[in-house]
Length: 301
Image (cartoon, rainbow, N blue to C red):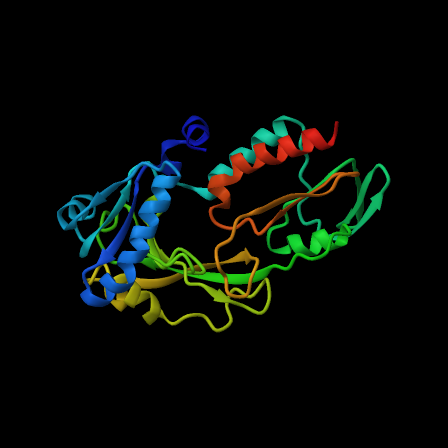
């Protein structure tokens, strides 16, 4: 992904900012009891996966982020951020240059399985395919059922963001994450610099009743303020304004992190299901595409 981004996007669309996973100085005893074991778990997992990182103490943390108040943490220098709209548009332009057609505003309403392929009903039109790749995100369970493969269920977990305002442009320069339990439904409320100088804080994690519920019963600002002040005590309520919300497709009501499902659920005609592709789905998208392509290449022989 990094090679593609550096080759195809402008420098305004990505930044090699690094990631800091930190333990706060606030509530010292509580943080050492709860956060330190989680940090140790992350260190072990990082080493097992061959990730390049370094362990930093208070002085090292402040060299990376001068405004943060933290006991120490892990710094991963190779982590980058990218403008998701720009990289998606770049993917689509390249796909169209290779003959791919996009049919927007075409909701899939039915799928007929034939001996030699599929007929997909969408937006009042019919489309015929020799194979089917289901990458419908929140609705991937429903599309799979339409294609005759039941058993998947997506649980919509909403994540909300706030934006930092009224602070210096370089107040937060790096991705700053808390050390979270491996049983957490997400990566914790963290700081994320974005393109154009904005800094977002979030996301929260909440199971919602419907896949399009972006607004009902949102978390109060105080939840984000407490998370912000854990690392940056000078941040006040006036420095936080609501940003946006997104919904993640998860496989369980408890929201535990699980591996993506990439499964050839029918050999003939081939049906490849991509289920619960949540964060870091964008970062993994090119690897997922290569893996899925290899599966289909074998199935279509």
